[in-house]
Length: 265
Image (cartoon, rainbow, N blue to C red; front, side, top):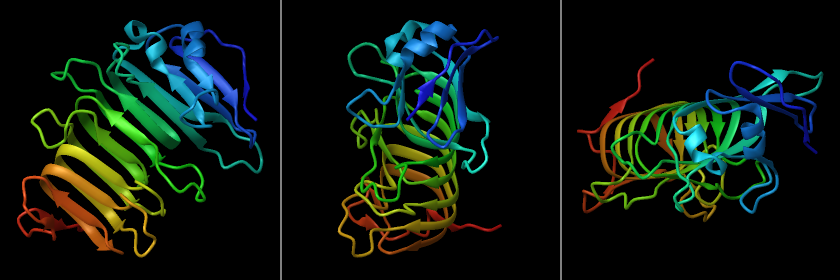
């Protein structure tokens, strides 16, 4: 059970709540007021996920271009000392969409929908998260993160999420990821669309450990990258049927030597 706390006065908008393990989670926004951020925080009351749900589309003009940080500010004995999971919504496709600046989650980012109608500006400048994807190992699917526009940089330890370009990824409007660095693994869990990326272009992707596939689990989209173009790809290893498919190629990518570069420490 999550218990929300009274809003506090601070230089940035702040909202706090307790997780079930006793951790006190603090959300800050560089824009808006405490009351506006509290109104956007829809704790577990949505059809998408049971995780805390930050719905910035409630005030798009207020939060446009905001930097969002989610972290544990007070740790209790026996807690895991990180955010268990949060979904950030900044895109609904109904005119309430917005771009964000830097998004930081010290813990698990369940997913993020983001990006306004102006594709000439980044949907989000950077995303930094400890992990990205399903919260529990027994969850057998990843919720799609719908991206309308481009992403500057992504840095994550484990990527088990599902990044989906709102625009057709095979078109010139497909999402472009500037740099994506996975410090550990992609698709470390089994599940539908776990570790799935479908975007137009990835300028540089680095996976410092293992890119896993579905093995014989039968899960669709598990350990799959679909893109129109990948310019630089550095992966330590790919196992269990992990796949990379390029729309500009007639065949499934079998690690083209012109693209794949082995990761070196």
